Length: 583
Image (cartoon, rainbow, N blue to C red; front, side):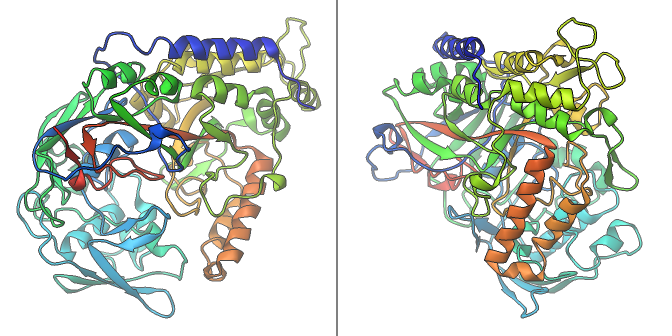
């Protein structure tokens, strides 16, 4: 039975109220940290766009985001949402994901063979890079070869490994990828190793400017001036000026393939997330997704409109099970600390997720029990999952059964061998709720006798936070993060034992098998595929490699002067060539 700790709940709610009340302080520039995005509007006047007017050319807008960008402005190399936001303005994909999360032709169309293994793509003619070069299939062939190259430094090999011959090329056993055949400058054929229902969903969809990168070794691309200082793309806006970590100034690309954009330019500006409301109120930024903790303050502003989206992602607290073996390219579960399933389940029951959602996200979200967002068609019914409702007594019982008991009488538990049991929480800075949210998590654990503390005694800046996890820093034990997900429910990329972004370094043979089954030949039957993913969610829900907190709502706030904005479940700065201002 759920037993709420009313003292902690009151404290959380008080913290949330106090924090939201601080959001209207004078605006300053600073660093910030944000999360993800998606679309379900609530029936309120603030969710409705202002009356549309006739689009006109001219003007600039400032887009604010509360993460210092890393500056890897090449789709094949970027790692985080910070650079991703900039790239939406700069680069268009060959095929695009609609609001219904299905993939549609965009710059390229395709046909598929009856055995689902051979795809023929036809490019639109006349699409240009920002330097004036025409986009051809050679640019896409080059991108696929870069990502499959043995010296590739990015994280997207899983988006090309399905191509016939990609593995041999990746391992240095072949000089080319056998499954790629250029037919003419606008037509290319790709052969896949095996049929998969989501080949198009997972296939890398962004060309690279082959001529522009000529002479740069693959291993040097990530630090090349063509990527860091003077990046180019095929999108509606091109980079004019970059101030690392502070802003990117973009200007209109007049030769954009979908027509001349309305705006003269867009400034992507790093802001302090705690000050988002005041920056919007003062007109210093025209658009941002504000922290959910500020939603009540934002709703009071009369110069903006709001579009809420159910995010295609989730927030979590992960357990560290081991490390990434670079040589074998797979996870190794060699950290014994969290191997006991009852221990992990106890952590789940110890945390009042609903109280945290209410206090720090203003209730803008939905609790989840498995790593599948609420907007996914493959989400398992709640009735088939363990709910892990807040129950500290259940947590204590499981800890006792697992052998974690307070043998010294100091209120904190020892491990089954009688040694002091401590855990650290690795958490990031960036918003006004970052510190109290981390401290609340620690307090929930301490209340059931787990001696928890903040890793290193402080929150970590966004890039440092993930660098430490990516490099398996031994100080990382528990880590609180969030994932933005792809439109297809395939867990490949995050959850297989061969995925570098399997951050918990968790391996489960049945999990790997089900993930493979979910894209196998039988999965061309949608209902069969859904049932496979339900089985997988039930397995993960039982095993608890992570504590899945909630899928949140993103609060996209837009100045009324800016119109033509389209948002959906994975982005709020789509189709910016249609944006225009009324003044």
